[in-house]
Image 1 (tube, rainbow, N blue to C red):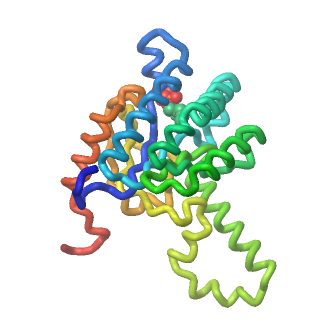
Image 2 (image 1 turned 60 degrees about the vertical axis):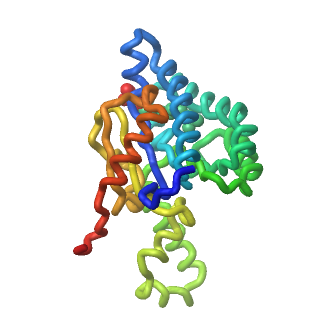
Length: 240
Ligand code: FPP
């Protein structure tokens, strides 16, 4: 592990370009997703080597439910396969596995596997690998507001808390509660958008865009992003 205070605590990745990668090779889109799992493995290993503590991945957005059913099913199956195959590696390498998002939309069997994987790796401390599934930033903020509103409705004596409520207090209602905001957000495949990802949490994230398609984004590319991050001057709106 490298001793460098310029290593981001939390790196988050919008994995994009699997379909184009497959098309360039005359293959089905799902071929690109399968190859993308290899990039997940490579970046996870590199994150541990670099001393990154949180690696989060946008694996499936709320909007992705609108893709053809066969592609949605293939992505869900890839997720199951990856969990089955990788659980021993997670335990061996101290990887805590976390899935966040609108899990009510996922199949019961997938949710059971996710729970099992999360429970078994709960004590792992080298790296937290956070997978965003059926997630969108606006959905997260809305579910937080609903949760808070329901709590207050159930206990009107708490309504006085609202005026004193700060940003930290509200962020505890987001699904990412307990996870630091991303220091660095990477998006692959040349798209220059946040696409309804961690909208609240990205307030001060450094953004890194690359033309490299996700299946080609491996350890060396991950390192290049970390090196670029080390050059950034983070001021959080202050004067230095
Ligand atoms: C975006 O590429 C990618 C996705 C919507 C899926 C990403 C999922 C994986 C890599 C597999 C998940 C596995 C684990 C273990 C987390 P795209 O299909 O939008 O590509 P395009 O823009 O070229 O069409």
